[in-house]
Amino acid sequence: MMFSQSKKKEPKETRDPQELLEVLENNINEIQEIIRSARNEKADLRSLLTSVENERSQTEEDRRWIGELRNEMSDVRRDYDQVKVRVEQISNSADRLESTLEQAFAFEKRMDRIEKIVSKITSSEDFITSISQKVDTILEKFEKSGGSALQDSLRGITELEERQRKAMEIIDKLDQKISSFTQVTSKTQNDLEDVVSSADAIKNRMAELEREIENFRIMKDKIDNLNSLTEYVKSKVKALDQQRLVVEKANEEAGKLNALIWRIDADLKQVQNKLGSLEKTEKNIARIEGMLQQSQASINEIRRFELFMTETTQKMEEMRQLDSSLDRKLVEFQRNSKHIDQVSEKVHEINTQSKNTEAVLNTLAKHQQMVESTRAQVMEYEKAADKIRVKVEEVTQEWQIIDAINQRIKSAEQQIGEIDARLDSVAEKEKSIAGFESRLNEI
Image (cartoon, rainbow, N blue to C red; front, side, top):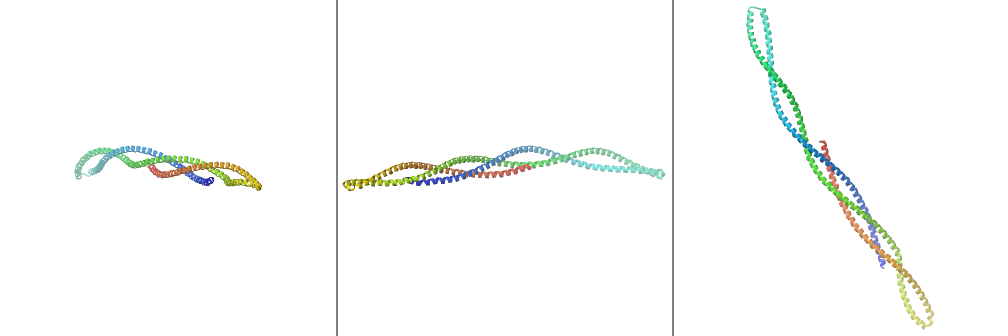
């Protein structure tokens, strides 16, 4: 009865490990898929980290370039200060040139007046020549005519001589004035030539100054743009420093994720090893089930032998009772000789039955040995079942470990999602940096 109860309990225990093994296989396949996806995400993270490192190197190059720009800005500021000093000098010289130009304009006005006076003098010389021609005509008339006409002509001549003398005085004065004016005009012409040359030089200088002022304005605009760009670059550098911190944190988290993936790989290897051991235990369980099925027939035979033993014991008791009764009857048979033959026949039958019972007892002893061997096998089976229970407990513990691994994987997926969000922000910042680089290239 004990064996039958243990046999009834064992199939339930053997079914539970099989179901657990099936569930374990399904979950291990899911874990392997999760690990594959995690490895793919790890590869994507590595590619993203390489791209981030490239962006970091580009940002470092941009920093160096910005440092060079700052140095150039300092050079440009020094040039700007020098140009400012030159512009101040040029503005002072321009004021001087304006005063000289005003003087030149006044001198030109004076020269126009002098030219007008000279034109008047030339017109008076023409008048003198016309007078001399008239005198010549009058003298010719005097030579032709005589008397009163001559006196009249002499009077006219004397008047003309006085007029001519006055005119000569005027002409001498005019000659003196003209000589003085010629000296003044020569000086003024020299001065005008100097002024014209200086005016040309001043015009060229003014054109150069205008070009330099235009260049200065352009440089000033560029410097303003560079100042705004430097401020923008400073803000971008700060943002890139923050991004560098984010990338370093992402690297740390990626390292943690790598360590976690390595741990998961190690746990998976352990789970696979334990799965192999579970497969071995499943095979052992199947073998034990086969052995139990084989021993079922022997157990049934043992049960039949037990029933037969109970029946034989009952028969033995009956035989003992019969023996006692036969003993009593023998006494009676001895008393009664008539029944001796019948009693002898019954004794012969009893002897044959006793021989049969001895043979049955021998077979029962053999079957008892078989029962003991089967009991030993059943004990071994119970020990194996205990081991299976221990392994099932280990499997449950492994399931708990797998649940913890799933939780870690979920946390790793959350971290990967955060890293993806940060990488998206890094990509947006890369786009802004690319726009900034395009602006710098345009500048």
